[in-house]
Length: 145
Image (cartoon, rainbow, N blue to C red; front, top):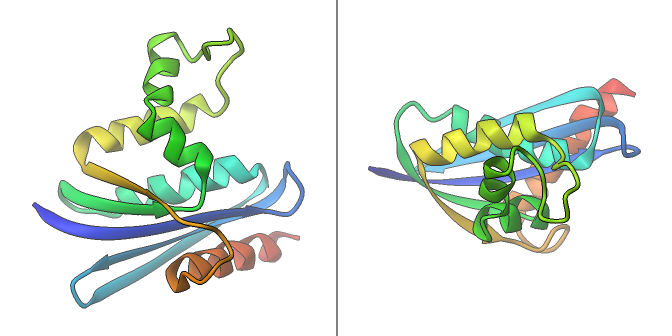
C-alpha cells in the first residue's frame, strides 16, 4: 500500500456560523490542496469534513499519516470513542447523544478502508502544513460571510 500524508483543519466564524475546511494530501513529490465550506455549521463538523474529504480523495486503500490539531477528531478515533458511540446507537457513555453521527459514520467507514495513523499537532504553531490548512479553511468561511 502507498503511504500518504494528510494534514487537515477546520474553522468557523461563530459556532455555529459559516465554516470552512482545508486538507493537504502528499505522496512523494505530489501535493494536492482541497478546501470547501458550509454556510451554517460548527468547528467540529468542519474538522471532521476536512478528514473525510482528504480520505475520499484517495483512489485506492492507503496507509495514511493523518495530522490534525483537533483533539475531538484524534481522541475520538485513537481512544475508540467514535466506535463506542456507534455501537451504542450514537449515544455517548454519559447517555447523551453523540454529535455529528452522520460524519462519524462516514469517517469510520473510510478508516476501515485505509490504515490511518493518527498524529495530533499543535494548532496555530510552527507547522507550515497545519498553518496552510488553516488558511484554506479561513478563506472558505470568509467567502460565505
